[in-house]
Every structure is written in C-alpha cells, then in structure tokens.
Length: 257
Image 1 (tube, rainbow, N blue to C red):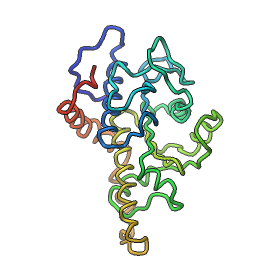
Image 2 (image 1 turned 90 degrees about the vertical axis):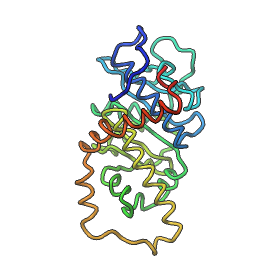
Image 3 (image 1 turned 90 degrees about the horizontal axis):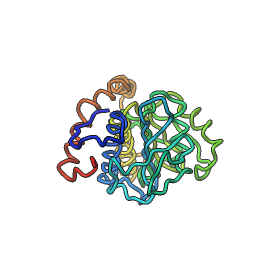
Image 4 (image 1 turned 135 degrees about the vertical axis):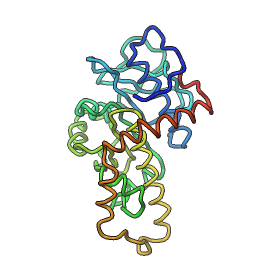
C-alpha cells in the first residue's frame, strides 16, 4: 500500500500491518475531511497482510477525524476483536465488509458510506445516470444490491457477493455507496469518483430529468475503456494517494500515530 511513512513502526506490529494501519487511518481522516462521515457510523476496513483472516476497522466510539493508525481495531471474519482493545467494536457493522473481503482476493480494502448524495441516488429507481464524466468513469464498474434492512443478517452476505460480482463499486439500494480495492488507495479513489458522481446527479436533477443533455452515442463505452480498473489502480497508487497523504500531513499528521 502506498504511504509516506514518517512515524517509526511500533515493535508490536508486523511491517505489512503497520502500513495498512497508516493508510486506513488516512482514509478515515479523508472521509471526515470531505464531510462523508455519519457520526461514528459506517465503516472502512482493510485486510491485514498475512495468512490469518484478520482485518482492521474503526473503534466504534471514535469520530473519524480522531482515528489513528494505532487506534484501529484488529478483528476476525465475524467482527470480533483479535487481542486486547480498550474500544468497543460493532460486529453487525462488519457484515457487508466481511462478505466481500472473504469472497474476493482483490478486496484488500472495503469502504461503505451513508452520504446524503449517495443515499439519494441509491433511492432513485434508475440508479446512476451517465450524464457527467465522473459518472461515466464510475458507472461501468458499479453493481446494485437491494435493501434487506440493517445489515445484521449474515445470510445477506451471499447475496452481496453475488450482486457485486467482479465489480469494484456498489450502490446499496435505499442505503448508500460502497467501494472495493486491492489497496486502500485504489478503494478510496473509486469511492471518491462514485460519491462525486452522486453529488453531481442530485444537483443536475434539480433542473428536471427532461432538461438533461444526453452524452453522444458511444462516449460511455469510450470512457469505460479509458478508466479500466487497472489504470485506475495505478492512478491511485502513484499519483492521487501520495498527494492526499501530503494534504493530510499539512493539516494534521497525527493519523500516523
């Protein structure tokens, strides 16, 4: 995972785990910075490198802007803490994340939000419209999953996995947005494009759907080819994520602690 490490790794963490912690803590801070958080609710998770099926998630009693690398809680596939923690965790909240982490080898990170714009689009029968460049970048890689209630039923995991298939983003109907990545960096960038597309859609629909300018025929397919998952991953790792980490360092580098 791309990172600009400035804090020495504490001895109790393996190298791969500490880098994952720094990146995930940065993602939590960025979600708060962009105003995408929902008090202490929703989750961003990352797989801990190694043979064990362990993951990192937020301490349930902390705001996203408070989260640091060392405060993240390590959990198992059921959302139970691995080792001692002074913070509560929300096992029910990990239902969605665990389904995708366990089913997809490329799901090193899973991020789920409840933003007003994401929720608004999730409630629209037609879903995400291809009327902005950002939407066209996101749309070809977006799946949909029908709402089944608050995600406490472990049986829902099978349907989540079936619905997302091999795509890297999902609109959870009447609920919110979700992104998957083979790194925290790529996952966050996909989430960013999806959220920006939803925000633009809510704004443009204020003019009425009948007044929208439809993109020329063939453009959607062209943009899909220009924004393939491999290219998006490289864009995230090499360019966007290092820049975002520098931004956080300027604002408050305590996420690295």
